[in-house]
Image (cartoon, rainbow, N blue to C red; front, side, top):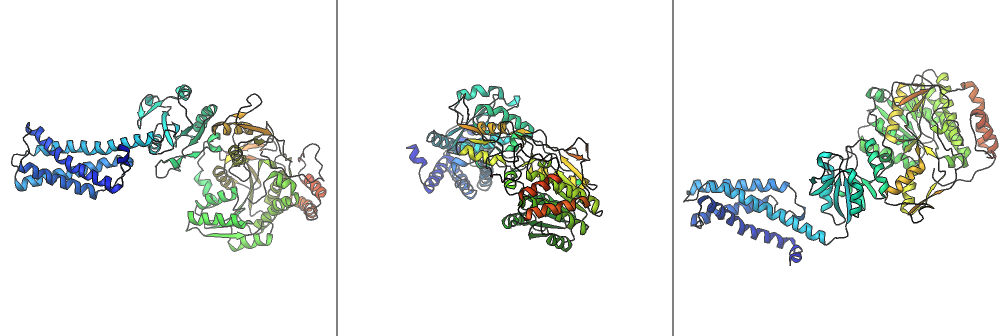
Length: 631
């Protein structure tokens, strides 16, 4: 019968609530009067009339305030304010009736007692009904996922309340580091300490852990995630406090863990003086503006009020996407998209002249190691000829600042892509002496999270498909950095340049890719399948290094490095080649590329980059087959 009552149509439920209040509110008044007078002989014509007035005013107010229209199972504590205000108006109306028509034996203090009794009745009737409906619907969904929430603060409490309304999740307990919360209840749920977690997981069949600590530092968050990885339980997280703009937590706020959560890099806020020096009030050009680094550079630049921002990219879709995003973010920003290649020197000179460019960030490059290895000639033309065209155009236009985005793969390269970026560095170093009116510099760093070709999306896809995760070598490691952090440091490094500088970003400690893969397996709720544990879920398959791939990346060619004005940026002094000596080498290199002469191209590259060390046994004249495995 109760289930049928819950399933009644809303108009019928509202009518039943109105009927119940019409009966119970007068009874509350009679009870208040009886308690005040100490007798049950209170049913006089005056008290009946007063009870009718009070009930009528209360019902009218509750109708107008939407109390009857609220869905009972979802009502919140804000309803209490409505009840308090409504009953206050009711008491005031009763008092005015007494003043106008006389008390007739009904004491005015009985109104105060009525307010208290009526408040208890109205509140308990609504919240009691909510609790009953939630328990009833909960019993109908016994197969809900059992969830552990790590963090019993405000975010955790909001999430628990949201999950209580859902049909999919049931919060069984909280874990929190704060000793003051141990064995207390938050949102009606028990809180335990981290040291009790192992025993609790043996007792409960928890299927998901949610980190509800949006204000926690990245390093501490990484430590917590590390401690949870061993349990092989699916782990999710709430976004950071900055992303929770309205402060409201819902089930849809839960996201998958990202590599940034695992790395735990504490962000360093940019120095305002360096960050805006080459941008604020200036005309800025970004090449490769639609790429992962170029687009983030554009976002950061847009925040510093440039006089004009010019976007150059040869990908129509990428250019369209970043232009649309920036127009939405900063509608007042003067913005010009240019569709074209950095190899088109005439186009570059025209753009720099037309927009009186002050600062250039050269991010356009082919970066995918195996693809450039198997498409050597296009890689050389785009990365080397493009950098040469940018440097010459910037120098001739007397651009104040020109910054090259380089890579750790340019250090003692073992692949063509790394060689092309090292040659691009040589171009900018030489240009610093050739064109004295332009300050040329280059910024070198490792992998950025979320860039094209990143291993994390591939690992996630392979885990969803049941594996195996493909890894090129068990000992391979890489440096990682967040894209916004890298872009901010690039901008600040360019502001410190004096001409020909090679800046190296502090990438922290390198990450073993196999450890990263194992963490992702465990935090996705699976176990690793190995010869020792053949019943595991996801295997890791070692498929061999790709053409030109290194086990360990480096950031410095030599040991001549010194600190800069910024604690996350180092200044390196490295070999350079004069401009006049480079030009004949480039003539040879570009002629070989245009003839698709692989051997001639390789010999020209090795002449420019003597530290180039191809993999043992590699035939410089052979065309490698492209590889598709990760890392």
